Length: 364
Image 1 (cartoon, rainbow, N blue to C red):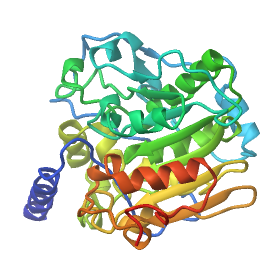
Image 2: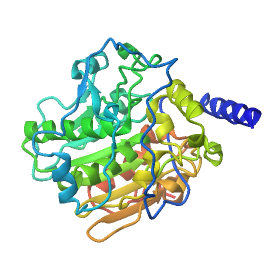
Image 3: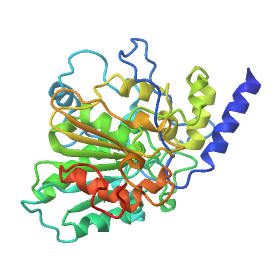
Image 4: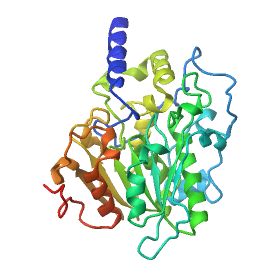
């Protein structure tokens, strides 16, 4: 058994070596019922890896000026069951916001909302990345008249590996704390712009963060569009690693969490986080969802696990790029954030138009 664990972990590390910027996710069939014996989330790292005195101050997060967790659950119609984050206080610890100044965020200078574009667009990166992940998409959308806000989030001040903010490896912290950061960031954007809702665009892990935020923080009431690129909306098999019951071996799970980051291991199918996410509704009322996937994804696997189910009050479009466009290159997980044909699909989703490349040089 021990040798099997070692071989499985080694295969996982080898697969991660092909990643260049973000890690994440996709899944097997979602669970329909949340087990009553769902364990509490494991710590971010094992004893040998956790920093007991982080350089960056951390504090217990608040849910934002207009959204307590109790309000969020009531608004979402949740009357039973135990909300995440259970009893682990680290799940609501977030770093001092000033840490993100080490990597510039992206914002449209002096942008004014218009009747044609009444909602600011919030861009949310994936694991091991930062706001600069959007250096191609952000100017494209700005040229189309959209107000852009690309955030940094998920810095893990307690990690022995990911505690250097200057390295720009964000979205490594506990996913629930990242949902709180998204909640508070959206509140600030709404206050700054005077808008009533935002349009969300997210890559990889961001899809899972959106899913959690929409439900547990009534984020659907502040969202017009939710567009995900290879979003880890249900977790990832990570090319087969999830077939091994990692979560039955706490030491292995903790060490993987320390090495790959807490957020990366939380996205693995079978983790307590993914099991919780998969117990929630796939979509929430009032939101127009677009889930974009590539058949060549080797990170969010299987690629079509990113797709969402339309529930009452929600509109859902599930799109495989290769089925509607000629992208001009083999689209990997990370290329979804830079490809020109994908930019067309995103724009049309924001415009509530048919999500196709028809009429462009990338049309099939």
